[in-house]
Image (cartoon, rainbow, N blue to C red; front, side, top):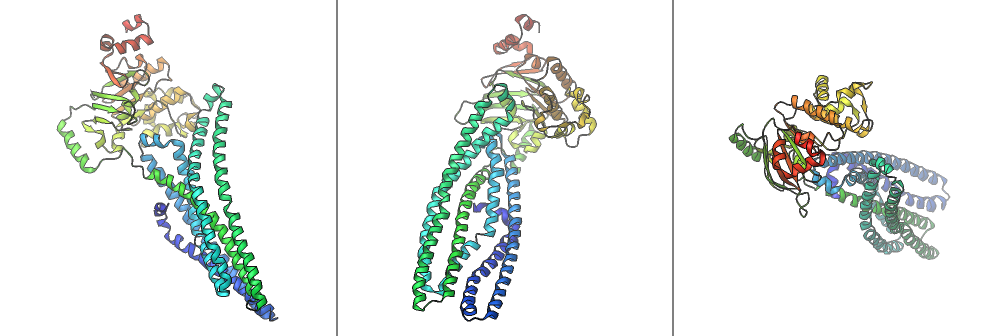
Length: 586
């Protein structure tokens, strides 16, 4: 948890002055019981009303000064904790955005959301309590014991005897609750997964009449986390009552021994009253300490989860400048006739222990070619194109773009050359123009319209009352599947990339619109290398080169005619989609 203290550096002043003002309040509070003892002994005992008023006025002044110090501390604590939380949250978000698909898949989206929100909030509260109470509560305990020792050393031994008991109680509570809090956080991630799946898949759930089953699934996850919370709550709840029992036991012992001393004439009534006030202060401070222990145990668990993310080194990062320099020299030596994309004996697996998704893939794609990629489900088509923009790193082999290894490009530079339209069409809140402009922030209205025309999107956009300024709801829920796909294609085209990857991005389009889209892209993509990933033969058959994948391997490369003649896998795909007569005519 202390590793995150670096985020408090901009708030050094608040972190130092806040506890100091709280310390002033604590010092003033410690003097109040002694003043009460003086009033009882000298004012009331001596029947001196003037002394009572004078000392009473001093108590009021000290209380007002203490209240003001407390307010200043509260202000500094709020500034520091909110600033700390904001900085940590922003840093965590920036770091998560640098992680590759592999790291994000390992953590899971719901868990990352919980860490950025819930865990950071937990740390934020801990920082506020650190400034406000961590110094005050122990100081009150120690100070009250010292003041009681000054009043009567023999009675203070009772308080000193109770201290080890309290330390043992704290130790037992912490050792029992710390692992359960970590388990609670994991179960919170689990319920977030269930909730995320239910909210994002509500249409599917209703379509298959699974509402009752999903309610039961959520109830089980909720009951599980409730049981864990009750379990840790039962242990934590013991802290305050056990502490109260120990301190009240000390009070009884003090009253008993104090009564003996009063009868013997060695202790005044004012001193015993002050003594009881100090014990009460200790009791209240210990209750605060017990709550702080619970709070910081939770915070320690959250800090561990946050550090786990921050300690994760992205497997895909920008290369060192010297490595880029050497690669650039090699690129120049290869000349201008090098392939725009080259796979050199590439093997890739999502898991080190599982079967590879791609095995020994080698091919060259020249500039300006339109390449069709086809194969059955799970054959490796999407994995192949995801390696080009370096969403994942190849397990072995090399991937070259313009003769330069993709691992030697800066990620921004590499992905700036590539426009990719993923399988799942995802839009963002804003207008249609805003979503298309994601591909090029500086795109003019004419460029946006041109990209929409190429993507066959202008037709439906122009029919909308607000045209390109039509609002897009979260995730594009106010648009059909085909409309969303065409907008994502326009978003990629407006960037005018060197390489355009369409990963099964026309699956929601009818055949006529799909054909018009492919024709429009071909007519407007001079010099652009286009990858068409699809399971439709009609989508890829006009490509300059077709790559057929089967079980992560290349089962054939060639034109439509060549593959129909030489590739049994391609022939089988054709037969599954059209009749033999139609296949022979195509």
